[in-house]
Length: 295
Image 1 (cartoon, rainbow, N blue to C red):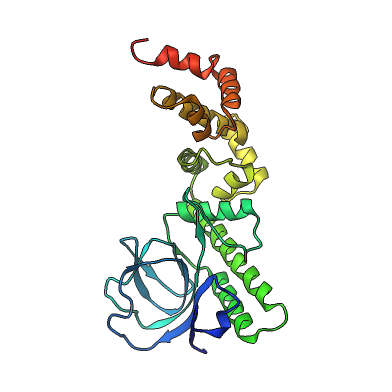
Image 2 (tube, rainbow, N blue to C red):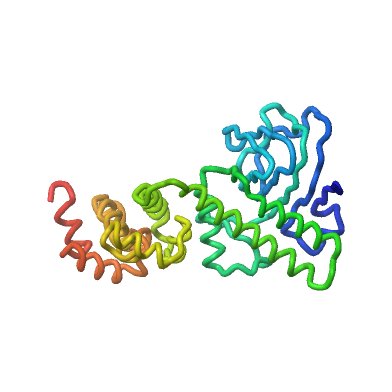
């Protein structure tokens, strides 16, 4: 196994990849004190375990990683070893700089060929994920090997290949996360977690494809599951969630109807008013007047 550590600004191999902050593979044959102190990360880190057993802390939670496992550490998360050192074993990794929007969404950069919708969906799934360790994901190790090969051999089209492989790595991890999180879980519980995620960001214009991706399903199966479970299509179910949240906000006199409309994902106050009256029989203003205290 050829060992190396490439770092942005220090390694010429990464000059054409400003989004790759570090790329490496290492066989650690001895314990070195203070080699892995806990610290807050500034980029997205993906580690793949080749050999050995590693005990790491991610966001104050301890995880045990074995060969074939992947650790996913996001920007702003605290990562390291409680012992303060890297255990004996082999691993490969890549650190990627991604953009984090003011609204909290995480997206790749211009280097990525993912569509805007795909980028936002993947970013949301990664941010909402509460399990940073992915078990038995050898595919991630294979992709990292290909990235390393392309970076060093620099054959025709290698820049495009590397960026496509990074996209593939994100897609592979996201798909595995949705399958891992939904494994053995009945749909009602999955559905409840999806609804919670939607309520946390109702201002986003959710698509059926994005919602299906959140639970690791194709759109056809997702449509069928939601219809059977709720009696509504996914879009109509989402509208009902928007209206239920709007009802809560309308009971707060200091929040304007326009702000409520935008915060709950409607295009305009007129769109909100029309939909609200269709589903409740009242305009938002009428509902507020009838439901505020002392009215």
